[in-house]
Length: 286
Image 1 (cartoon, rainbow, N blue to C red):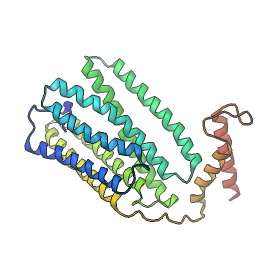
Image 2 (image 1 turned 135 degrees about the horizontal axis):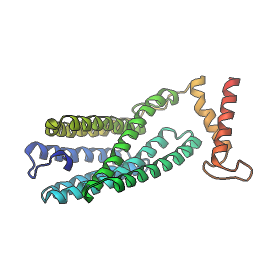
Image 3 (image 1 turned 90 degrees about the vertical axis):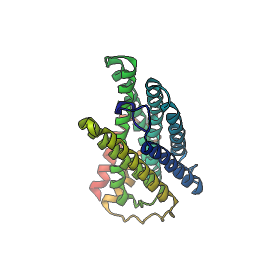
C-alpha cells in the first residue's frame, strides 16, 4: 500500500491492487508455514505480528476507498500498533538465537525494555515539539518510531551474521530465517525511503518496487520456514567461541539480571562490572 505521504491517489491502479492482494497472500503463506511447522508456540509474538499484518492490509484497502484524511489516520494508527509488535519480535528472535545462554537472554530483556522506553519517549517528544497540525505530529512521531525499529532490525541482522559461526546456528534455523527476513526487508525499506525523499519524481515506481520486495521477502521467509531445520552445529572450544559461555556463566553467578540481592552489589551496574572483570580474568588465563 502507498503511504499517505507518498502522493496517494484516490483510485488504485491495477498494479497497486495486484501488489496489495499479493502482499496479503504472502503473509498468509507465512502464517501457513508457522502453523504447518507447529511454530506458533515457539514464536507467538511473530505469529501475532503476521496475523495483524493480514488484518492491517484489509483495513487499509477498505479505508483507501474513503477520504484521504480517513486513510491517513487509519494508516498511521495501524502502523503505530504494528511497529511495537515488530520491536517485540526482535526480542523473540534474539531469545531464540541465544536460547542456550539464558543469562544473556535475561540481560537482553533488560536492554530491550530500556530501548522500548527510550523509543516511546523520543516519539512522544518529537510529536510534542513538531510544529503544525495534529496529522503532521502523528506522522512525524510514528515515522520516527518506524525508522528506529527498522534500524534495529538491520542491527539484528548484523548480530545474527556475527553469531552464526560462533554459536553454530544454521541460516535455515527458524529464528535465523525470521531474523534474516526482517533485517533484509528493513534495509530495503530504509533504502527506498531515502530514494523517495531524494527523488520525488520516482515515488510511484519506488513504491511499487517496495511492494514487490515485500512480497519476495515474505514468500522467501515462508519457504525457509517450511524447509527441514538442520541440527545445531558442534561449536569448537576456541577462545572466540567460549566468550559467550564465559559471559553466560558470569552473569548467571550474579543472580537474576535486573534484581537486587543483599549478598550482591547495591545495584545492577556493579554486578555487571563484576561479571566483566571475571570474564576478562578467565580470558587472560586461557
